[in-house]
Length: 452
Image (tube, rainbow, N blue to C red; front, top):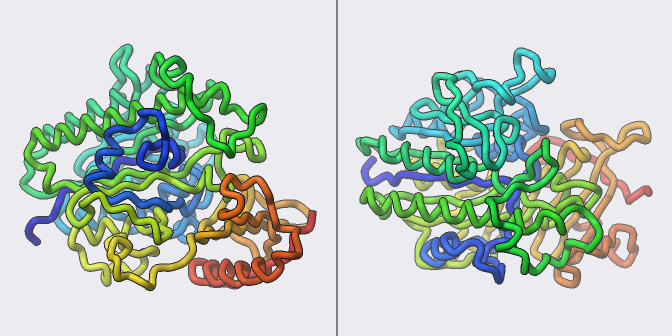
């Protein structure tokens, strides 16, 4: 196949969509992403299929939902025999490289032989990225904002230079990777940043030095309630992390120009999920609210050009694996096991059969399922013997938990799930979510009214 583009997947962790200028942020946080959106395609309504790190990554690497892969919670190994985007691209003549956070190697007990959160990821657990590897399974466990390391393909620790912010150091290594390409064949690079994820052991967000001062005058998103959660202490550093990511996106684009391959390289920018800063149920994510399920998504290159804004279709990160296959000119009919739909269809103004809702599975905080339509958010969760289920992959019975009218209540403050005036709406949405569950999981569960 001729003229197959290089592909860079610029993946970030826990970034809200509304932190970006191209999505309405008033501060100058993402000038490089905003420019890329003006040259490429911005998807206004993009959502995750699983609002937690490992499961979302499993979906992106396979094109299948987390329960199908067996990775519905964190710290579950991606099955060794799973066909992945890297393996498929390898078979079709691409070089494949991975830099950053992996989160798909560990399973079993903490500290046991299958726990690789602080150890090098064995080659067989790297999902098919065979040509270049520089990663940690759980990067927040091997690093902080200004210290730490990843492991190269030989399992040797590679440390951040002293005083170098983590995202900058990772991008230094991305540029090294790009400099080492022979360009004899196209490359696919998945660079997975930990920013702006909170630093687990320090229980805070760690932005570059000066972030608190630089973004002291932020305007808080309206869903963040004063006195609740930890956003008031952390939001400036959160924005600082995102600004660092943006600066490094700019560095990568400059390198592509310098190499003479910018016109033949597609860049995909998105996040695994967002964050509502513990305002909701003491959680950052793992819920159905837009603050944690709506993500930025900008694609630049090849057919994704012209500054187009897709604002009439809801898309999902589960669509991205098929999109990557399509960009690489790999026949989609050979990979019918992949869910979602190529986003090349979504940018077609004549496409009038796009699905009207975005489906997601929720785990760890609950065993839940949700759909987001243009107007409604509807979420259900399961319980067993009177106890709400957290770690089960699926259930036969769910109870209604949330209903939001996003037209009337865009900040999702008024849960209508017990309001009988919306009985018909709930009935219709229950039919849709049962159908989505059937398509993915092969069963149609019972959905009962809210019981608390």
